[in-house]
Amino acid sequence: MANLRCHAYYCAYNDCTHCKHESPDVNDEAVCVSFLRRQTMKNGDPFLFEYAEDKRFSLKDDEHFLSCQSCSCINNHDRICGANHVRIDVSIDKAKCMNYRKKID
Image 1 (tube, rainbow, N blue to C red):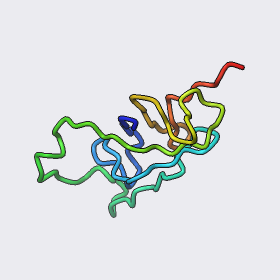
Image 2 (cartoon, rainbow, N blue to C red):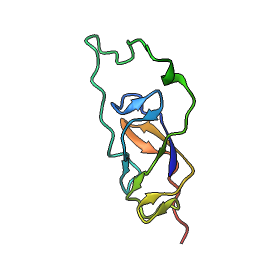
Image 3 (cartoon, rainbow, N blue to C red):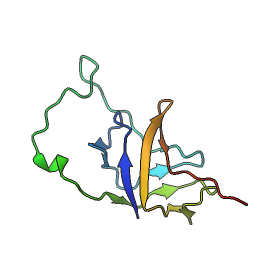
């Protein structure tokens, strides 16, 4: 299980870097295919909202079974990510796994 932190803030599943998707999926190019662009507010700013729950700011581990199709990644173990900590970030309007490391043959 990977401790996942997502920095793709425009993703609908992102809740203060905690991924709300039950089983996120990363394709063979290290792109998170579970990424779903958040609907914006009327003025176009998705960040104009108020947090009413203190629990959102609590520190917690987000352990996920991260499905990974990138068989060339050293963290891929039978199509499940075996990394202890995973960071998803935005790169050219795509959510990508920043922990991708190519296997050395």
